[in-house]
Length: 132
Image (cartoon, rainbow, N blue to C red):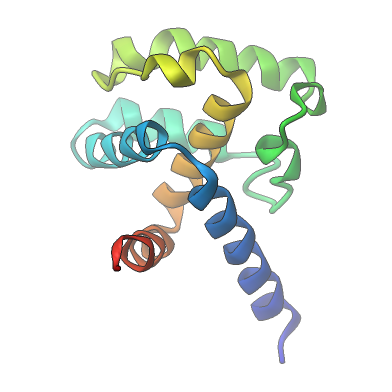
């Protein structure tokens, strides 16, 4: 079996587990962002901008961790810029439960950016989690 296939499967398992742990507000926000990204280039650009770099290389653990100190100063700054600009630029309101919890918002944003790139994963995960 090819090592890349194994890495992709492991990556998908991690993403699925993190998605399942999210609150309904977080899942709805991700859904709203992905729908907005289909028609709003700014939303698409923001999610792509967040995805580039470590996440794109597969180094997602710091972004999905509950330890906010795992991120570099620059990544924390990017996060706060996104927190302020995202609702203004995208029209997708950030639920208060996400605004109050740095780690939860970072996880939801990270998952949304991954799902933007891996659309088939999002469909597969949501289809499998909404079925009885």
